[in-house]
Length: 634
Image 1 (cartoon, rainbow, N blue to C red):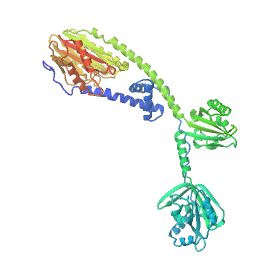
Image 2: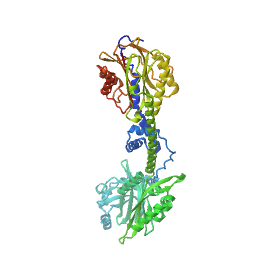
Image 3: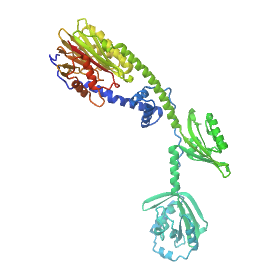
Image 4: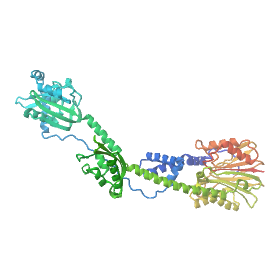
């Protein structure tokens, strides 16, 4: 198809394949690498992906690498050997506190509560007013540091006690609902605190009243309800008989329970265990988590510090014995890390801190010990160390490949000043390898004088970087030069080159092949997904557009169209690779438009044209190869 004697019309969709390729290489490539490395590292370390990403960032900083470069090393590295499955975290058995089972006679008690609720209480105030002075009750209420109350019995006609009345309470008295003396004085016990009946405490109170024997209960888990709201707490209760009835005292263990729950959480979340040996009485006290850390039950805890070696991995016994020797001879705290043998040849790593407690004479009377399960930390450290070694080996391999790629590139491509000139044309080339060795890619160019005195020139870019791209570049370039001897038009040559790429290498690439007949002043050209050439004529710069054809290696059997345009003396055709116009933060079409503006009113000298393109576009030299190719009709 002929574009006429002037420039070919622009086609906004012609550079769509190149724009898509730019997006793929730019935004997606690094993200995919980082995601792949994060997943690989999470599997090696046995940690969530978010934590693995943080470790990847730290590795990159340690090795002074960009994050994508570190990700590439991790993703391509292979583990030395399969890691053993991580040890299950040591976790102390949680003691689930449940309400005490209801004692026998539950149905009778519930029936009693129903009858008490319906009972007539109109005479309760008169009953309290008629009470004689009870000095014993007043003494108990004033002397008790806990909540305390004076209860007087309420009897049936047969003399059986079926409830109590709060006759008086001390100032500290509070029930589970926070009610004190003002709210409870004069009210029935079972109406205000039905849990007394359901827990069996009411029967105990009646027994104290009738038999005169004091009662002490708890700590017990106690629950009661009021107006449909239930509350529970551990509680300690005491009851004694006084002349007018009984006095009870009670204490809720809110603060103790809260502190105990907090300590349990600290032990569980931090995998911290606490223990104490009483060297005088011979007693030992280990927390649940302490026993879990050592893989024993609380009952199996070593009876003395000297017996600790019995639950330590055999190879680490000398470490523990040396620490204990230091503790008892120097009487100072010691720290030691040791392992505990588990089933299947696995080990648990513990950090242990122990300190002696001395009496007034400076002699040890007890030993306090704290242990922490650090197995996960040590496993991650080992895995990170192994990963770092893999990255370093991979880095050495990649450096060698990059060196080979650079060497291969220099061996295949002629120096810029040694490019063969073509009949009826002046040729200038500027081929710049990426400043970052890791980004050396597959840019190539070629010129050849054909037997019919026409000239062939080409530019191309193989996808990827490093040695594979350099090898594919060599095959594509040499293959085209061999095919050119057939004298076929550019469209046919590009089609054959596409078949060659499909048959020999699992990659893709772009290429633009031009053929110039100086006798006819006719330029014919074909593009395989390459960026459009720019025609410089009379102070203007315009893209030469044609229908976009597939990239090399993308579609087997594809046909490529040959375009043609007649050149006038001093017309310049400017070719380039994507490293000149591609930007991460902009569409590639914007880069091409900017290039045409830069080349407008370009000087006549071809080398100055190349200089203007580089200066005006300011490409990222570290990100990719850059190849500029300009031909001028004489």
